[in-house]
Image (cartoon, rainbow, N blue to C red):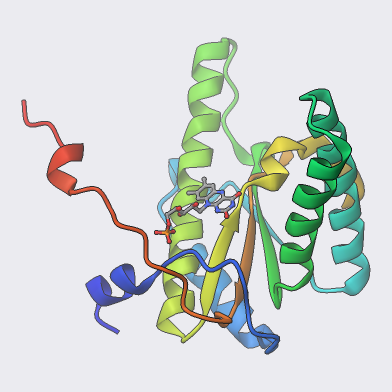
Length: 199
Ligand SMILES: Cc1cc2nc3c(=O)[nH]c(=O)nc-3n(C[C@H](O)[C@H](O)[C@H](O)COP(=O)(O)O)c2cc1C
């Protein structure tokens, strides 16, 4: 597919048809991710493919428990909490393929001061965004759709414990992949000239 066509066709899909995503397609997405630019060329990433029902259930239930606590802390009522958590849980459960991109801090440079250490971490986060975008575009290229959920970013320690990840592996997102149940309404994009300054 022509590059700009692929870029333009990509959109966030939040509801998928039940069709399975074959593991060779998953491998194609991960191979595209691995081609992304990264700080020092170090590819500070781990992609956790939630392949088994047990892994999925573990992560869904751990994230739901923490999110319930966060919403209660924000003073949402019980009915609102149920609705929001159940919708999110259902969305994750029904996604044919789930990939959790994580930043791998173990391969980053270390600095004695917080500023440079923070910049090093930010570079890793920027690069995983590039890797994720590669995956999203490759999915479109292969006739699939994908969505981006930020949920793990809000409970990284819970996810680490649930999946027995080391503390240096920091979950960033949950990428859902499948074939769209129906084409979502396309969101209007801001004109790039409004996002640009020439100095
Ligand atoms: C860092 C990041 C986090 C996002 N988190 C979520 C999310 O938690 N839930 C969701 O439905 N979409 C999420 N999205 C998708 C955006 O809502 C979506 O990209 C935006 O609305 C533009 O729509 P489009 O992707 O169809 O162009 C996220 C996107 C990014 C880049």
